[in-house]
Structure formats: C-alpha cells, structure tokens
Amino acid sequence: MANVNVRRPYRGVFPVVPTVFDGDGRLDLDGQKRAVDCMIDAGSHGVCILANFSEQFVLSDAERDLVLDTVLHHVAGRVPVIVTTTHFASHICAERSLRAQQAGASMVMVMPPYHGATIRVRESAIFEFFRSISEAIAIPIMIQDAPVAGTPLSAAFLARMARELENVCYFKIEMPQTAAKLRELIEFGGDAIEGPWDGEEAITLLADLDAGATGAMTGGGYPDGIRQVTDPYFAGRRDQAVAAYERWLPLINYENRQCGLLACKALMKEGGVIRHETVRHPLQPLHPATRAGLIEIAGRLDPLVLRWGK
Image (cartoon, rainbow, N blue to C red):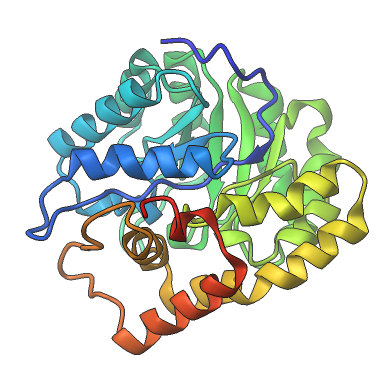
C-alpha cells in the first residue's frame, strides 16, 4: 500500500489521531475512520497513530494491530501515516516497526527505551536500539525526544544517529527550549536531518519554525488552524504566520495547559465527528467547566472539526 501522493521529505502538519472508543470503552472503528476523514479534510498533510495522545498506553497488542490495520486500510495512501512503535525491548520495537511498514506506514515514531521513573539504558545501548530498528525496516524513523521518556538525548547524539543509521532522519523535539535544540540538531546533523519537527501541540510553534522546523506534530483537533500558521510561514510570509499564531494561540494554550489529549475528542464529539469522547480509566473526562471553556475558545475560530459532522 504505497503512499504515492506525497514525496519525501515530509513537511507540514501531521497531527496525532485519537483512538476512538464507544460509551463502554471498546474500540469504535467507525468513529476511528470518521476521525481520520475529518483530520484529512481539515488539511492534515499526514497523520500519526498509536502515539501517547492516541492513548497507546491503554491498548492491548491486539487492539494496536486492529487500529493499525483499520486506519491504514481506510487512509489508502491519501496521506502518509506515521505509526508509533515504541517499546522497551529492541527486538519487539523492531518487530512492531516492520509490522507497521508491511501494513503501509510511511514512517515509524519511536521514543528511546525507558520504563517508569528510573529504568534507563546507556547512550551506547540507545544507539544499538535504534540501529536494530533501522536495520529491520526501509522507511524513515522519527525519534521522539519527549520528557515522558526521561532520557537525555543531546543534539550531538541525535545528529550522530542521523549520520550513522540509515533510516534515522526525522526528529520530533518536544523538550524544554525546543527551538535551541532544533538549531543545534540542524547545525550538527546537516543534510542527515531530513525532518526537524516541532511537537507538543504547537505551544512553541513559531519559535520552532524560526529555528528551522519543517513539520509540526500537534493534537488532531484543528490542523486547519495550524496550517494557517505553517502555510504562510513556509511561503515566506512570516508576518501573516505571526498574525495567525496570535489568533490560534489561546486555543493551543488551552489544549496544552488545560486539556491535553482529551481536547481533540471533545472537539470531535462537539462537532458530530464521533459519538463518544470516552477515555479509558484511570484517565478521567474533562471537567464540564474546562470542556465548556475549550468549546468557547474554539468556537470563535471556527475550525472544521466543529462543523464537519453537522
């Protein structure tokens, strides 16, 4: 299942797809397809599934495979699909990554191996971890440099992996002072850095674009809004991008600081995209007042998600 419509390097807005559940917490595959369609209609250049914002940590392995196959079959090459394949064990992560490639994924996203608050491995083991994945597949690997892993990954080390490991060439940076790290990564890695990307719901998007980011992996609720920033920026119209960022920043901030992964589902439920905004226990639903604030701010901006299913 080749993605024939988009060529590398992948650029633009690649939001994370929520995993959709019914009212009892079971997978809602019809809702899953509708969520993807809405995100594509809203201008996503590609999508990412099974990420942390997809609640990957509450899914069984069988459910992961079902979501993987359902989404890739439904997307059918319309846009590139990035599949998160993170696992602590090198061989399991490599197997997951090969499974994703065989199903039609355009890229895999992987965090460095970690477990809990204290179990980490040395830099040399991290290098071999990513080597094993790179040797198992023929599609790009995006290293997710995120606080949740609690693993220091210097820009110099990331650049070394990009230079020495064939398929390591994309980087989602969502650490504090992302812009500074992006600049270092690009400086150290040069042409080996095919995709330096912004993460964390675009809360630092403008600074990261100024630092050289060529992609943004955000929440899935309003890719059309994020594109109002990135499209003019990449076209050289920075003033227009700044004005758009000023308009959308209150919603970006509200998602990042108040709602997290629940924001996308609430927006999709409000807009008739999905029937339920269920998250799996022990995650808790949004407080009604917090949800109302989200919808109020979003309503002023008129994203497609609030109209798509009505």
